[in-house]
Length: 158
Image (cartoon, rainbow, N blue to C red):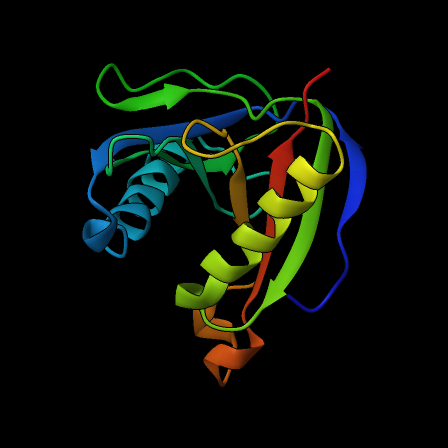
């Protein structure tokens, strides 16, 4: 993690997502495929994304990941009638940090952020934490994986 942890106030962010319940070893395939499908759906409506792709982790308490891979939108967008769902990212206070480096190493940043959240009186977020990663740059736009930037967010209780 290159930057320190800070608390920010977020506005609710409209988004389209595809949800899945997968094992951690399947994580690498699911988000990228989902982003492509969501981008196709946006294009079919003549719309552009309103931000960078994200992955939100709803529940990991049973050894699987209930994951939502998504793309921010400028407002509510019609679902596709299948598995592309309108699901905004929540507003409110969140702890955030920046991880710079390979995606597979972001787990250490999450561990550090989760420990900070608990140590600062916000309770444990283990298992059902609702946090998300925002991929701030495109892996195809960097010359080395050490340049990848992933912003992580953990919502804090009200």
